[in-house]
Image (cartoon, rainbow, N blue to C red):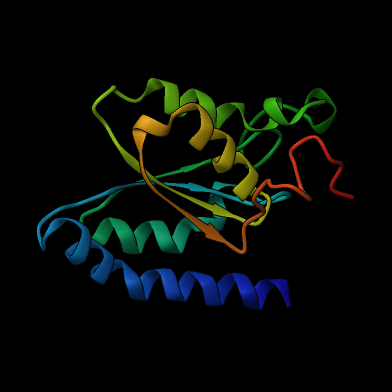
Length: 146
């Protein structure tokens, strides 16, 4: 069921991409997307979307969060959420001050992009939550999610 939701969300994102591009910035504007995976996945989970978006002329970065994908840290080396999300925070910090990106977070990746939105609000033009977790009054980043 989770896989069907994820695939449906991705199809919707792909279908809306040309319209969002034309509506937000005119027909020739290209965006920089930063794709953030869910738990137990990695940047590899975005490979089809990355190819489609790049073929449309967009700049796309798919990141491996802590202990995910090709990130060399082991799960036991990541005791805090800040350790898990540090690759995204480092990427955002490395962007030039005038660069704005579109963050896309799937499921648990929603918490990571929420944190990035708090810290780097001036570098974010939009955020997309694909079945993404978002901290709020009943779910904050300090709660255990199991």
